[in-house]
Image 1: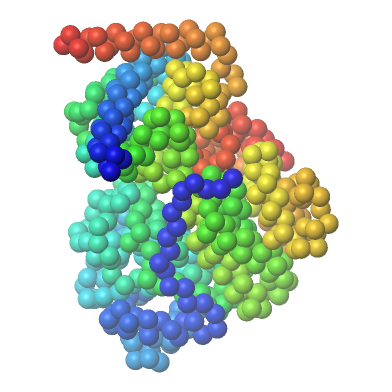
Image 2: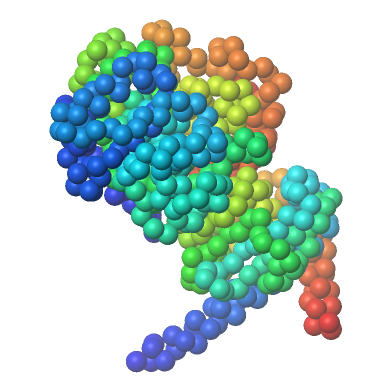
Length: 395
Length: 181
């Protein structure tokens, strides 16, 4: 069906490929930024991923004024306030977030405080609160999956109240996303697989859910093709920088796709499972994807069938009868998961995770129904439906 | 020329229609929370005193209801006693009209960026389910199918007719009481 109305927005400059990091000084200079602060986590620093960024800046005569490397996996309002205080004390004028989803979200939140003023980030929670552009903000992703470098949202935990604060504004989008294959070369196999399946899920849900549109479709299909062609190759050749770049680009493209067309039930279940069972997000995405596609099948038969071309290539697509392509797409995703299980034991069922008990399925189903992404699932989901999908995903 | 002359009238008519629909839906929300156990189950998890608003930006018609406890809603009309907990805001009168005249499903309107949600998204999802159930009850099946993503399979005619009659009776009573006051 033709989309009668849609919106698409992505003003992020994507700087991707060999020696991309070396473009940072030039790009900062173009925004009159001279005193950048790096926000990252201990894992990134320990993996030696800060050195190429610092060296790239120093070689162009640009000093990194301050480095905060203690962002926790679930960033909090206290961390954001502390980093903003250091930014102000050191008179920084720009932010470079280096890391995965948490470091990037923290960078976005810190940018709100240092641009808008104050120490209480909770004041800016919600949609459309920000009315002005923020300070220059660059993102260097070190995982290939979240797509946070091209999304206009951030989530920060308010420890005192025990709630997650969402922030949504187009001003949270970074000025530039720097995609350099050096930053993902050392990712361990398990994380490479889970994050790539996160990108795959962003793209598949973007292409099959209610807010799909022609522009997000183009990004989604390109992302699916890249993940399908490169993921297993990278798993077998982790030091292949071309393959790493392909996955990193797929992640960014899938991020652009889903931030303009939203996601559905896979994410609703994944968010709930993450909150209740503390499983990594990418793992949850990989786990639920085929079960949710089977649940949605009759509503999404046509777009899901189209995806076979990008999942398996033109020969398989041409040889598969149109009426069987949707099922063949699900089979392709299942085969990919089986191959990943063989290589790094990425769980395919809740039981295989070893971290979920059967009595947690009901609370997961109930929480999933209240997740915002369920609104965009093409099929109405009842509590009974959610429970049924979870039962199928159990073992 | 003629179209230009009629445009203000059409706009005024749409405004009146949306205002009327908000008034009916607000009262109907209060009514359904008094008769339907499923709506009461959904509403019970909302905090007591929780305020929900649907409105047309920037300062158009409003529908405000409060959860007064035990899964019951109270309709406040267009003015609120406190700041809202959750607000669903149509970006324009035309978008509210599309939804209120059942030309665009609520879920499609969300997908088309016609509305903004301000406040706790999980509560907004709960209220959307309540609104969907209300529409399934009070609208004829053929129209309800245009309003909700999926018409509930387990909603059969006798239950629908009895509940709809109760809701409409309560809405009419509330209108009369408001007019008398």
